[in-house]
Length: 286
Image 1 (cartoon, rainbow, N blue to C red):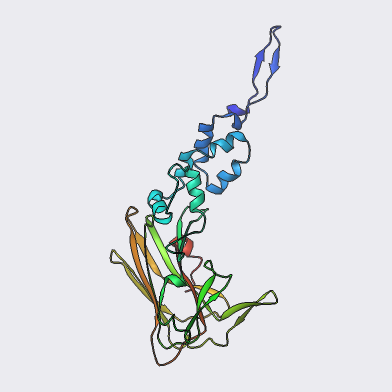
Image 2: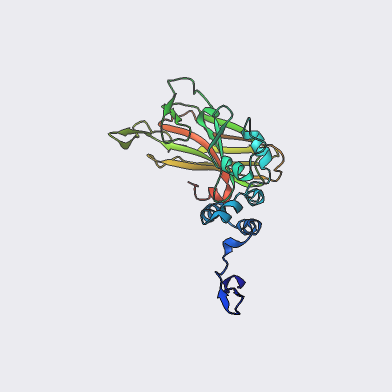
């Protein structure tokens, strides 16, 4: 309340002179930084535009260290080959919020700006796909609809199997793993998106089976039919728990439809996505 009172002082002839009342911007930067510590990153960036004092306070290391994952130092060493040792915590946060590519361009990791949670994406080229090198069955096609600028397109096959694994220092928490898939082949014609579903077949006869294993013994399996042609869908393979942030968590996963009584085709495999479970809830297709 004290900041709302006007301040006076007496001049030599005994009269009082009204002074300008102080504002929150007159507080020391260290005090302002303590206030910013309780704000979300987007709010901090907005407040930093108010004046010079807030802008200076917004660079305090302890403000941004509270927004970083507890194991951010391990994350930085895993993702970046040459990271400046003297970079500020705000600089580290900014770098982690980008789509950071590693492992030969087959993986991308980023920090969600709103929640500070780690998200990971593995491209189709980072997966083991049965028959992917045989153009009678598969093709890698370029597209702007993928973070990796290309997807694996299945024309037709009897034995469908996609496997993958990742070893990463996930912060503690519960995560959901999804396959990002698309029935039909999308393209652009005269600037408009069109999708050919002529080659889509076999996915309504038997369900696809998803499996997930972790290095500490967790296992999840589920199955469903693929549907919704013409749009990208996220198929939930399962959840896993990380309780040791200072160690690498190894995850193996698969997607199979190996009933050889019929062929399957017309499917685009974009990537495998790993999100914190709370974020992943809005992506679930089944």
